[in-house]
Image 1 (cartoon, rainbow, N blue to C red):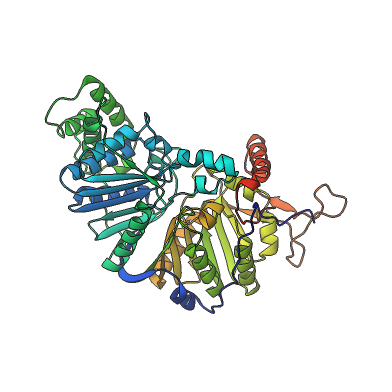
Image 2 (image 1 turned 135 degrees about the vertical axis):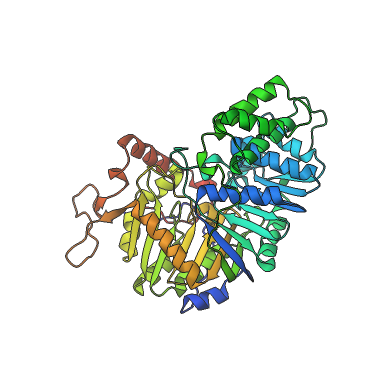
Length: 528
């Protein structure tokens, strides 16, 4: 057999024994996380996700905490920053945490920092950049160690007035709030809106921990503001507010949006600022799905929900990973079925062992993930392109379904049996396993599980299955001796049947490069 189970690593991390639990209920009781009771709304619709964020922020009266991995300078990012600036000017205390890698353009001088400085200049806002990569670049090169350089804050948190909170997979970027018709790069994602003091307080604790990490950079207001951006931010927020609240008059929508924007100022803007505003108004009109979306439409609310908030520190703070332990506990507790929705599926040796044990118990395991045509990560595809057939061979009850169309699956959900559900920011990839800070909301609820199962069934309808050859007894077949791929699993349908040859070649080159650079990392993963 040519397949090799090798870790892309220079240091093998300690692998604790697998958990010993006999049910999902027992697994849930053993999860390491803050527990509380509250209400929850699952948001799997992009326009509703934006409406929820906009409504929470514009209604805030005391405090807004926002943490995100990616923050872009498109119309959504500018409008949200304008809304934060307006709220801060009204005395609301703001804390904004951006990851140094994911939000590099926004955090960099001469690119986006001027925009952040306008928020800080209100006197009621603190902005931190988590683990700025340039601060660690020299040290990483000297040590030949990219861990500290790459560790990041992957949490997506919005907490308002200590009463309501949103967490999940969505960043601040147009791709997370538009439809495929509006944006060819629009993704499919899931958030959860929570209320209830214990649950919201637990997410506030996560924000406190990450915001005051010892490895961050403060954004300070401009000593001399040569190019003011405040007017633009406030006006884009004004246009967005009119658009999402349906306060736009036809037929001249652009003029109506511009009037709403100008109403946010008590003075005329400069000609250049007005020009930039009009560009953003054109951009805004490309997203009719969010028009009139506020107030948030009626959605199913799960009342008196018992939930746990499971959080992970970034590697710049420590090596513990309660998220991995939580997933292992839940896998061990499953007795019938596990359905995984994840952008990627790259396992540690320990995780592989857990899935194999579940498969031996007869647990059906279904993976919903990306193909090369839907993924935005060639790294993830490179580490999966030859691994999935071997995973199916070693986890006999595993079935792999992938998105064939060009919509990335960015949601992170796992359903265990018919009662335990995980929703959050945790991916099955090396960064979530061993690098980034993450958040998972776990709940043992038959109602949430049923709703999740229905959503996942809809997702699966738009996917195709990767298949391997099997004999008459259902056993996986391998290429015989003398074949160029002797010992490898015979593939009937896989990524090379979906993606163009040029894309496959790029993915294969990426894999070769990654394996050649494994000395820079201590990722403990299985790759074939």
